[in-house]
Structure formats: C-alpha cells, structure tokens
Image 1 (cartoon, one colour):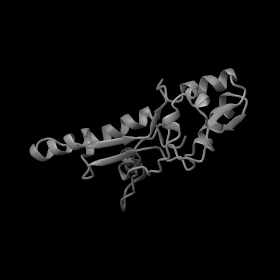
Image 2: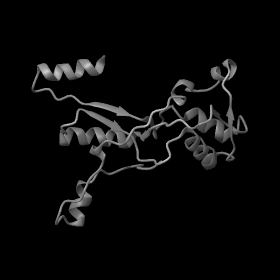
Image 3: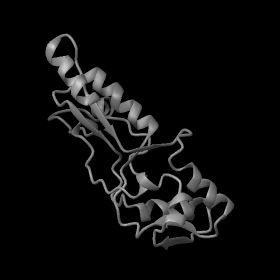
Length: 167
C-alpha cells in the first residue's frame, strides 16, 4: 500500500521523485536480524547452531553501509527505474551457507538442521523471516561498466564503493 501511495504521489506531482528500495536482510552495525545467531554461536548455546528446515531457501542480505550508499547513489543519479533491489552479490545466499559462515567464524563450526514443530518454532529468532525463500539479483544501479577510453582513476572514482560486496 505504501509503495502504491508513493508512486501515485509522484504521478500527481511532477516535482516529486519516488523510488522503492527493496533491501535484503540488513546487517553490519547492530541490526538485530542475525544478532541471536551470532550470540548462540559465540556462546555455543546450543552447541550446534540451529537452522530451521533444510536451509536451502534463499535469503538476500545487504550490509547497512551498502544500503545507505545505494540510497545516496539514487539521490545523486536519479535513475529511470523506480524499483531498486538492494542486495549484495553473495553467490550462495542460502540460509545454510549464512549459518555455516556464522558458526565457522565465531563458533565451533557445528550446525544442526531440525524438523519444525510448534515448540521449536517458538524458540527460533526471526523464524518467519528465515523460512522465506526470496531469490533476487542486485539492481544494475550497483553495477558499473567501464566506458570506452576511460582512465582507471576515473572509472574507480565513479564506481559504486561496496563495503561488503560479498558476504
């Protein structure tokens, strides 16, 4: 509903530019979507980091600094596209891969798959979000191509500066 209101407001007022930014799960500076999993892994409580279901679902992510950089780029470039998918370029965006990385980097490298029953669902942080399956590509707004006869320095200056391109 908010998307429709924003886009329709732009249709009635030609001075107003609106964009819909669809970010992946935001992480990086205290956002809480992964906090409980980092904590469980760090404390090894439970011993194996839990993964709801089989972990084959796709979970798009983006670092908060990259999301802010993308919004800044929209303001500066005013692209013709109205919908922007703000997700990083991680190749394997499955929940299993994310949880394995968390467990390997700050835990004991153990993960655990489990069948979902009512008791377990109540104890899983962000259960609904982590059981979604969303496969999207990064919008072209985040991708730069070198122009003919462009110097390396000039290309580097205008390229989108990823903070965490691949997580």
